[in-house]
Image (cartoon, rainbow, N blue to C red):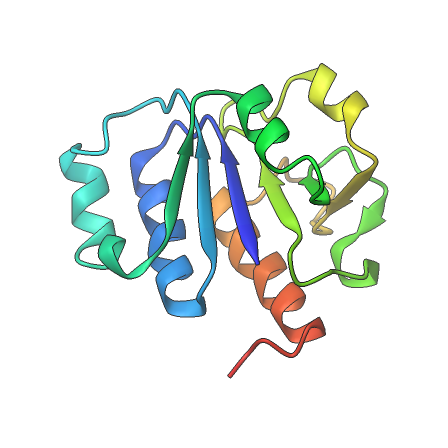
Length: 149
């Protein structure tokens, strides 16, 4: 299972997601540029020694990522989706794409991708923290594919 972060801009969230990746055997992909340096003390404080236990792949931009994984299914997590994550049938090698915390993904990426899902939330709120969204969706995807041990 693959988690893809599009230009993440909050070091603590990215670190928490990498830590989650280490714990759940997820591959983490970072589409650059990130809004912080991976040597940032806030990043290091949260990721601790888990970074070495997780496969993290960096991509220069979305086009480079898309070309490399052209045969993979990319599933966009977005508050704009109509389909709910728990009603979606995940595949073992899905690339679960999460947008930049401050802005999501550009409209051109929205238009390009067919599979879009969301976590249902209270209508009075805007969105979940990206690390929480990753944990919720990854757990369901792993459960559906019998990858939780």
